[in-house]
Image (cartoon, rainbow, N blue to C red; front, side, top):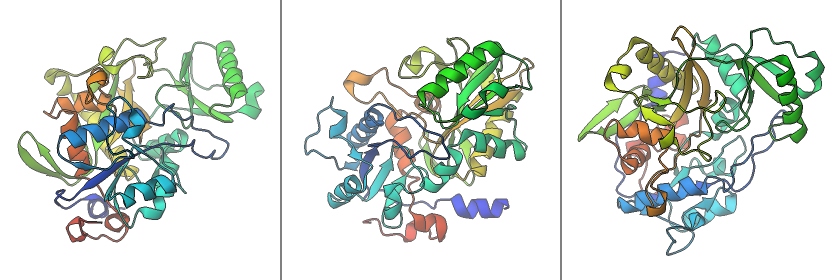
Length: 382
């Protein structure tokens, strides 16, 4: 498939958002087990970031529908609808014309029934079903010539035959993980066997995981935005392909792994690169590679890709996240809850609400994706 196909599939023509009425969804139930692999549910189902999004949009004058008429600032569930069929129908019955998919998606998700009837912000559930599998995605990107670490798949029924073909230390990871939950750096085969036995005994992540070499260099994360029209520093700018926000570096790791943001706020272990660092050849190369990766998986919404360098300074893409954390410092009691994407956005002059408004401009329906109907031809009151 060539670049012309990509441009026609992804480019969103400018359209007004004057009549956008937004409902933010959160994850009500765990996703189904797929091929013996589980994805653990975040407590609260992203209702915290969903409430941050809804509140911030409302403060910017965007019409928001909520489950309760007068949502409390501190009650996350007052601001978001469950991602069940009933929850989606309730949001639409209250006038929602756009669903913000701040939830975990998969093939068969209830929202699929509504994708030809309403705008959404986020990914296609069928794409997430495929590319949320890190083993599948990393193999795809490696086949496309992108730098991805070697890896070996380990099943629970083959514990006695584990034979890693690259040197220690290594990192054991869930196939459908969430952040750094369940990610462990191990230094030898004995420790790896202990980690595998413990992980498989709890069945939190299912019956398989994978192992890759530990990269000792700097860790960075890059947010990639979908093609479309954006408002940056007072000017409208169009992108015909995926493009990257400024790079964020990670530090203060715990045993070589960046801690989950629910444990350590990202403002305490992350920062955008300086202009000089951003312009370095290695960073410019990996930024372009991350944008290319987003093309390969047909990302309809923003994604975030974690990368790390080896001892020679070469960066590898090691974790593509289709549902990056989207907490934001919008509500008074959550001023320390900036996400990695929000940190990156700040470098180009976007505060959290500016980031959200630009994400909202990239909303889509299945007709814009599958039938090539320009967004300008879709009635705004849907």
